[in-house]
Image (cartoon, rainbow, N blue to C red):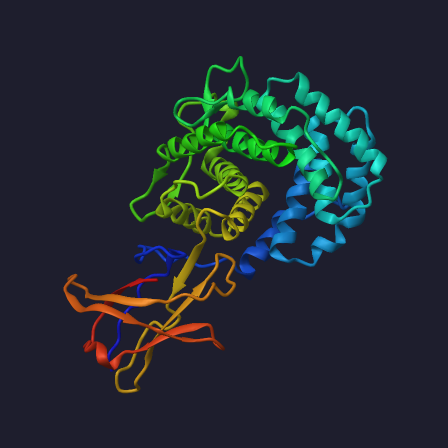
Length: 396
């Protein structure tokens, strides 16, 4: 018998070379779905708390395909409708109420949305607060995505107003009176800028788009990492009341960067290994300990699975021990972060290493692909390996 330990599960980038990482990473599973149902358990009256928490519950259940998502419609839609109609609702309230309505397909009268649009446009006209820009632009964009005709007048002026809050290192301030800049704020600023571009009735100044692309490059220069290839964002120096932690901060940047990439021409100049490392960071969380972390984990992975920057994939070896006498095959599964079948691609075995890092086999060997089983495979007999433990290196 010839046995070896498989290479740990690895993340790879579509059309980008990869190498095994040091710890096993698995895609989102039923364990995450069970955790989400527990973390977002409604109160006795069936509610999830405030509008933000309600939206996060709805969105998380929707992404994970949980049936509970459909049962939320009645109470959540009513909650959203009450806030959309209230004159006391803030831009933040309207933002979350509109997104709840969009996610659940709540029936909202066109006249109600007309009133919300007017209120959010008024906020944009008078504010210099990044959060107010974010909530107002985001609310308008969500209404537009629900099929209503929404155009932001003087969009370029709004774009410049948001851009004026940026800093030289790619981070953003929350307002003109803010002394400190924030990585979390950079994420929501980029998301807001993307929204402005989508709401504009004319092309936003291409030179300003280029400047923001450069801001994103600078922002990624501040990314933090672990030795195993995990990348994440965290704040440098912010007031304790504004500190969000690495999960929320990383999620903000992921949403912002992918949103801007969707409206920018061409690809952003972001190293693929950093997108790879961010996906590894969110998967490495495992089962989150709070509903907020759960939402940020699942939402970020959902965004990473469908974006215009790079698509992270997971490579894993389902079999742990191979037998030469039984003519076992080396089998490799390639899936998305949610466990779905990956786009068709080639997988090559580049190298086999012994425990002493001695090269046992070198040179590219393309694995065959079984379409029915969604598995790449290779006969192990020609590899000329003996009893022992081995590590393998692949590339796509």
